[in-house]
Length: 343
Image (cartoon, rainbow, N blue to C red; front, side):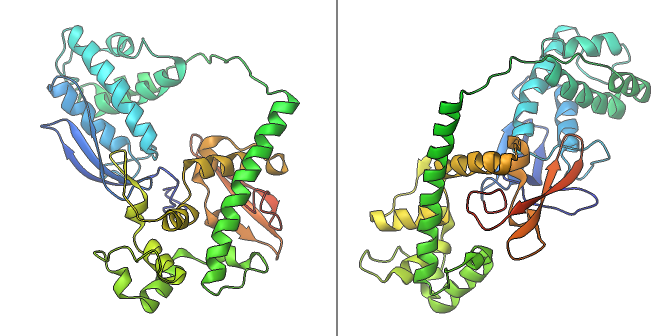
């Protein structure tokens, strides 16, 4: 994750860049790890000074924003997506209260607290801190109002705990392991075709850059952006070279899957670019392996760089908790595909 003391790491949905903030259309364009194309977000509300101020505050809340500060902690695209929703509600409630700008001197703490009143406690906290940023920047008494908002305390609502019975939990783990194992074996077969030694787990440490470099050196014409898909009868190495250098052909564009010829090349793409079913299975295996119990946000942050090797079969697995900006690590076994370190 992006962090002042540990550089920029690519979480699954980490925001990499704010490309543009357009106050005229109340929209933002961002680039993130979950897609190779930029994505647009719009604050769907009447365009007023308050709406424009809110949009700028949202942009400044993103960690990689150009005007960020110590409170700029948003990293995930889902955080931004949800913020657009509750920001819209708060701007609409401000309009209903008779105010068009957060710079209005009549806007005080009671007014501001009414803006996030409809939300649950978790959303209230995020909305409150966003409002604190807005008034700190634009309100004539912004420093005092911001301080008061950030010192608000919210009650915690404990949800009902749900527990799977042993048989169902076992069935979920078994199903996840089967899906994950099939995906690992399919990817290993590809590396065997490319001539790599897959007799031990060393092949799992081969970087994507190395494979792409092989493809560009071995089949430069196939690696051109405009290169057509090889014929179904083409050698498998040629098909793999085309697959690894054309990742956009295996994603989705506005919900539509790109058309590919032949089941085999589709299977190659699935092996090299795991789909959501495979990723979900891997998350389940990772969570349950060695009773690790990681939650989803911690799991989505992980990548191969999360491991610090301390031997051939053991490593320390780094865990980042974004909300409280903390890190810890735990020992994990590498000799199994079903252990957290193996995953």
